[in-house]
Length: 392
Image (tube, rainbow, N blue to C red):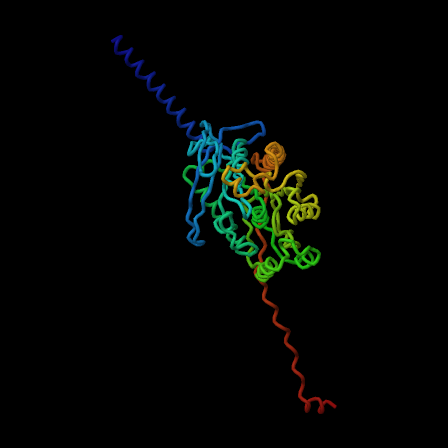
């Protein structure tokens, strides 16, 4: 009897322990199911993971190659993507939770590797960073320069990329769909303005070229013909805005002389950055835009930086091909300018995307459908001549 009671007590206590264990498991599962977005902090850092993705965009007839950098606990190692070498934990598991997503859009002469060190640095500080190579506007293909197709392709690729990443089996779990921003360089900055709702209207183009030198990259005979063709396609009948974009950081965006009144439709929070040593129209126009927008934009001027200073250090083969770009500043100056850039980016992105409490609200884009002209008012019929004579 004593053995039977002991067995009964052991069995009942074992069942209680099993029930407690199951309850704990279920509770953990419930907590994981409602896991809140990760709140990023400047002092919080992670290891960096990397996934390389390829998507076929049937509507565009192009392949979209993307580097995605994200926080992980795995130890990184050197990875080779000739001619580039990067440090990351490839295909590693991401840190649990949802992080802000930053789309990184390169300039026309760039690729998905052009700013890989800045992308990895942002991932180290709690962001998922997706950097595509824009198939028809990149280092190997600039046939559509100064055309609307140059930007139409980029806009389609970026909005589609958001959809693809949110649906991705692994990466989708790491992205907070309410906290999305863009970091764009050159034409990538203009892409961010367009996705934020700014509309090109070309009202300033003639005035700009009238005051420009013959060597201006926008006003030489070839570029001017291209821009006239672009402007002939305006105004747009559908806004390219993607309201999922909450913030935009634009470094020396291109084609700013095409934007005037259409800037009133831009709603995301904006950081404008001028790499002043470029000494070209884009850096000057960026500073002018910052003055025009005043309190609507945050502005950073990098007086000692040019476009090359903000790039990732070039591998040897690329340095041989493009020494004027890769060696435009000393390695020490490159580090200094990139530190200034990154600290400003981190402060900006953390302020607006670091938690769920301060996310900008973006209204729907405007209805640009042309309104039908009102029908002319009906004219009263003139009385017949005979009727007028009778009245007399």
